[in-house]
Length: 181
Image 1 (cartoon, rainbow, N blue to C red):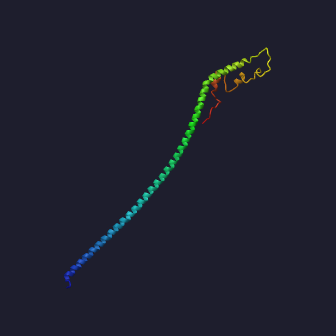
Image 2: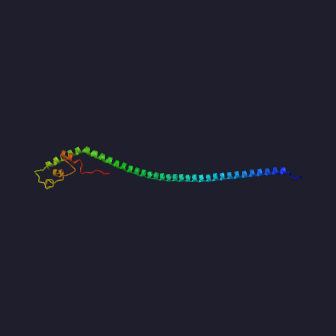
Image 3: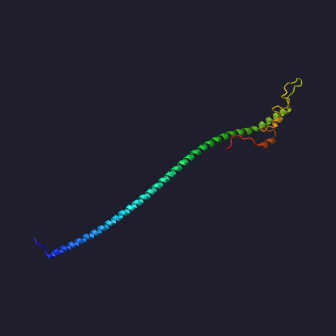
C-alpha cells in the first residue's frame, strides 16, 4: 500500500471537515429538538396539572352539590312525613267535626218540636196541679210553687227559651260544641 496522495489527503480532510460540520449541525438541531421536546413535555405537564386541578375542583363542587341536594332531599322527605301526619290528624278532626255538625243539624231540625213541647209543658205547669178538694194532701212539694218544672224555673234557665224572641236573640252565644282549632 502506498501512501495517499496530497490530493486524496485534501479531499479526505475536506470530507472530514464537511462531515464534522454536518455532525455539528445535526447535534445543534438535535439539541434544539430536545429543547423543544423538553419545553413541550413541561408544557404538557403543566397543562396536565391544571386539568387535574380543574377536574378535582369540578369533582369537589359536584360532591358538595350532591351532599347539599341529599340533605335537602332528606329535609323534604321529613317535611313530607310531617305534613302527611298533619293531614291525617286534620282528616280525623274533620271526620269528628262532620259528625258533630250532623248532630247539630239534627238538633236544629228537632228544635221547633222541642220548643213546642217545652211551651206545652210550661202551659201545663202554669195550670198548676190538679187538687182533689175532697181529699187533703200531705205532699206540699207539688203545691208550693218551687217545683223543678215551674215556669219561673224554666224562664230563668239559659238552655231553653219559650218565646220566638228568645230563640232569635240567643243564637248559641254561650254554648261551645266540640273543640276549636
